[in-house]
Image (cartoon, rainbow, N blue to C red; front, side, top):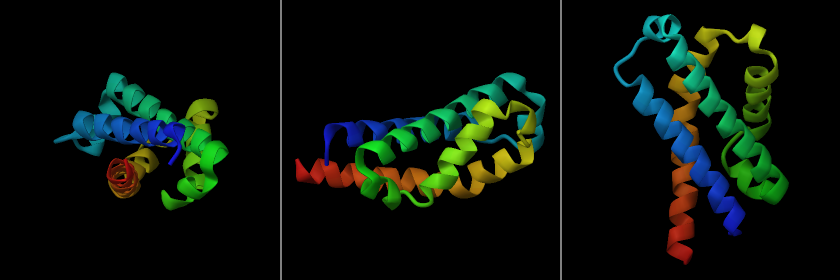
Length: 117
């Protein structure tokens, strides 16, 4: 696996860990009330989306192992450019349902890199 690929996967994992650590023990209502937390979480979701976007350009096969990378990138674009369209409930749903799976897949791919070399 190319070095850039591992870097993108590390960025995905690290941003997902930050989001998980930041939201641990919080509810959707807590999230809605705390602007700083929302902005930090959204920024890290943008990082994930951009890392996936770069991964697609460098090694599309690896990106496809993460799941529906087009939706991940589209979600990032809404966060970055459609700030007025961001729905906290949808963001929360992505964090609760999709982010753990994405993080797990990135970690598995990184483990494979470690085994290879």
